[in-house]
Amino acid sequence: MIGIFQESLDNEDLHHHIVSCEEPTGSDDEWQRPKTIRQVGIERVVNRVIVEWSAGLGSYGMGGYGFFGLKLAATEQHPEEWLVLTLWGASGWLLFDGKWISAHPELWTIQRPLTGNFVGYERWDNLSPKLLGSTIREATIVDNRAVFVLEHTSTTHLLENPIDTHRLPMWIGTQQYPRWHPDESMRDAWIISQTGILE
Image (cartoon, rainbow, N blue to C red):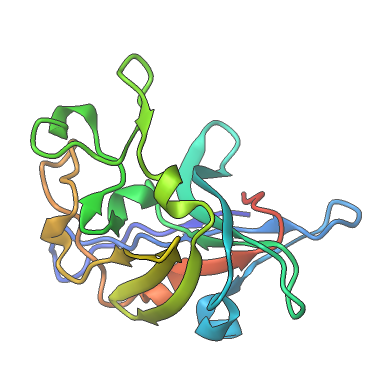
């Protein structure tokens, strides 16, 4: 059910990051792959209101992938559904107004992220007040970058996967910054999920 790709490129420490996942169809234990933004088009999410968010979507049975998801309010054209970034620890690939959304506690002295949710450490959430109730006014997703312009009570915010991944928190295990694989595309990493239940 799960396809996780970790392939080297030209002997460099460069890996695939998109996690292939499925969601229930609602009938007889049947599962299907969610549609990607490449398939449904970016227009699907523009002018949608964000009513919930999660940095803990996705499960492989013994733990979670840490997908980042935005639950979008229903419209006349579309039901309530999730816009999800299907990368391991996806919130670590994102910036909100140029700030980290989350980071390992060892990095908090470098920059305090907008959320802190590690067990055994201080917890806080400075993201929800700015994110919930926001409307996605503009969205651009290309192979190596995704940008969402959000409007919240007359204030504009920017949620993005930056091209320059040195702006993101470093991976503690490797002491390296995330590096996007040139064979992958953000248009495939961002999906539309009807349930938010992803395995």
